[in-house]
Image 1: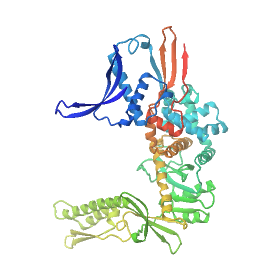
Image 2 (image 1 turned 180 degrees about the horizontal axis):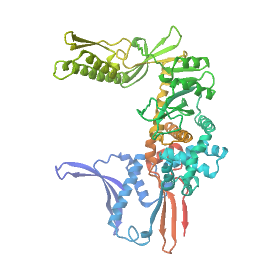
Image 3 (image 1 turned 45 degrees about the vertical axis):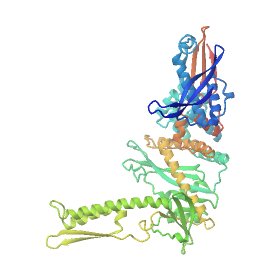
Image 4 (image 1 turned 90 degrees about the horizontal axis):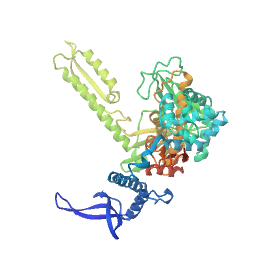
Length: 600
């Protein structure tokens, strides 16, 4: 079998072009003849140096040779080989009526039954065993059924985030997790799955301590950086009798619903150290001291947090406790002198410059950072709201000369006040004057002039300020440490969007918090997997990884033999090339579960 390039002429224009064909040589009546197996088309772009390996691999797949003898190809070429082999098999099956191949005889009894997905389950179980989670649960007193329910709840949350009822159906009807654990989920009652999050919640402190310790051992994490931030999620339903379900400022624009707040402390590698659930109306700065006191962090650790937590009281407390800090400044004043700045990052159109200033009063280091990309974004926002504000003022002014429009002086001032409230950021840079006719008490004209306030976003777009007491760190190190906050934001996005943290449908206080805790346990598993994959150059989101692995299944092949006995073979489908890349990066066997053969 080989690939041949052939020159032919276009029937439409008569112009010559090349097409590519997969060809097989066969002996017919003592003479060698070539038979075209597959037309690969004129846009076949595989380099000629790979043709021999590709055609040999297709031949292996057609002849069903052992995977131990497989030719190693890149994932892209392996995908092509499997696709071309499938096309050839399909064409041969359509062409033949041989009872031994496709249609009749013994193969008429062949059935494929009980498909169960196992790809993402295999990854999750691998990470759980790396973290020692099953052994820890046994140590905490979980029996065999409780252990299976707990693992099933966590895996369901990361693979198929849904309610306990839907997770129960998923474990019984769609997932092959039970085959990996050696447990029959179809015999598990729904109540046991409902109880699993509550049982895990009782051991929250012990589990968080164990998981973070295992992650530090696995990835050699240094406990010198502490990231802290808060987010909240909303409830569906009335949530009566839950003290922490309170109305507050929703980060998801759902202030119409009761909220609960999640406080999360991470290390510099993004692994959760501890968590706490607060009422939905909690004041962010008030949570910091309570969270850090529980950690007993070593003196000199660096705390990184956003402006919402960076109150003066919190910074004073951090200094008193021996912490170092790097925070986003709350001050609105902006300044930046490019001549005194250093460049810490420059890639294409993105450039980050930092001006270091020592506060003469406190001795604190202030870093005025200028981002080229941020400047473009902020300038576009300013221009958009400036245009809208001026258009609204122009409409009011023109209405003074039209019949049936508002002209009363006090009403015009009231409308301008509303515009200032609506376009607060743009309006602060305008001086507005309304002319009045003393005789009629009506406004006759509206005049406005824009004069940007000094040291504001209007005069310094793309500039933000960081403050720190890390006097011995250079600008590049400080900025790179600050960017870890973006990892924390990514954690919250993953928890909410990919792991089902929002919304919360539970009503009982203990069930509310156990629902959130299950999501955090699932995140430990997800981040363990993604950290290992990132170290091997795979930076896919969890949602992408789920989609990549979801079609690998375990299937039972049932075939009735000529002697009347039935052969049952239970095994996993062969991993697709893109799935095998994931397995190889993690060092996991690409065929989950053992092969089982039964003759009945």
